[in-house]
Image (cartoon, rainbow, N blue to C red; front, top):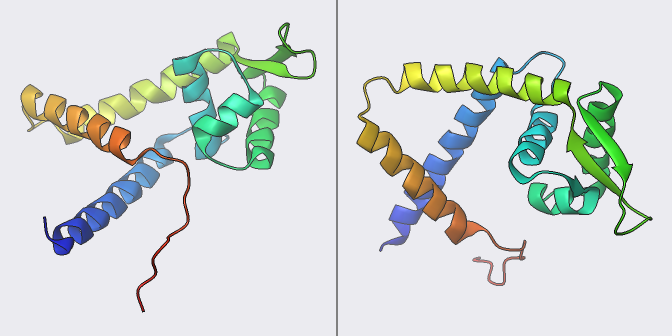
Length: 150
């Protein structure tokens, strides 16, 4: 495939990123998008340590820690001692955190259903399949560019 095709893909991914940021405007005003991501990951993956959460978010642990503190201060997440390692704590959603997540997830799903109303079920399922495939192909540890064009 030609490099121009991959450049086009890069531009489409930028557009998707902008759409994702737009969808974040539907979050409750007191819930930053990064903190909403933490709630979503805890819901999908279950309880975990802050290190595991940091790996999933692919951000610095200090940023993860700020999100965790923000959510815990509002009662949407709880930290408990890790029986397997007394030096760490396990993070899990509280009932109110789960309710908050369900509420805004339903709102965003309704918006997507409205905006994609003219898509067939097959098209939506194909997009989901291709997005999974793209994710699986691109997930890798952060690596510096080894070749920089001049």
